[in-house]
Length: 293
Image (cartoon, rainbow, N blue to C red; front, side, top):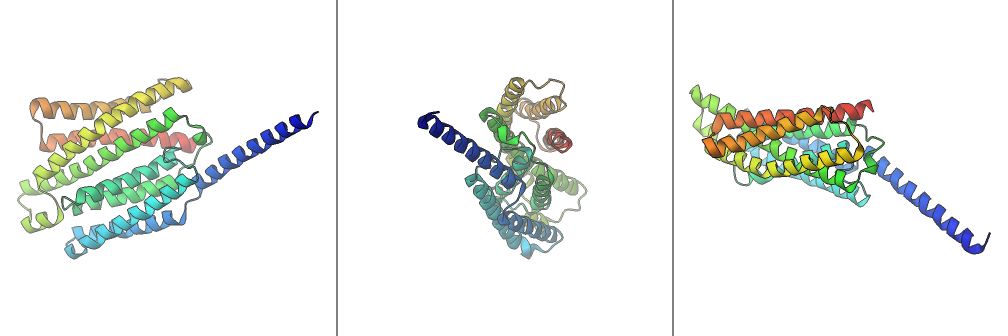
């Protein structure tokens, strides 16, 4: 055996070992959260508690609740960025996608709060963000999560963005229905309404804009998901497929009925919640499969 062959074999062995080490390192990081993650969890929990107090009448805590949410989102971004430097992609697995979904919900809420007073929405969203993070930590990383193709990662990324947008629209739908019901029962405090929530027309308009943004993103994710599943040889009998089409159909119907028939308000809010419920079922199917694998 010539020295050149020995050197070639040695370099090949070193390359294989380095690749295996990188994969193992990414797997460990996908399982072990960073310190910034626990800071984010603590701040999200504190923010959720403050929003509950604001909803109960402690309006002076609104700025603190928003500040805690912003600090939590910043710590969350640090965790995502740090993991990115270690080659842990937000779309690498269901676990990472759930964490990224939670971050997008928090960031989207903060952006919307720059224009409207959405303290009541914070009561809905902050516990949801906290719950998503904790569920993400309890979700197994999965053996195949590191072998995702580029198509798979694009699909998961787009699906995460679409679901996050629908979740924001659904949170506003819940607030819309609550405020509309209170108005109809004539038990609505005008001062409290101005302090805790946005006008009904503003809520309806913002919901519509969110759905308009999320629908094409989710449509692209759905198409890419079908292509990706076909490449992997996945069967068409999986339950997430019909649920994903129910989600798509609900939001498509919402956009069509609003444009063609002028549907607004309660009917749009209920359709938004129906579509998001189907999207949540898709996530639950993925989680159940991951836990069972």
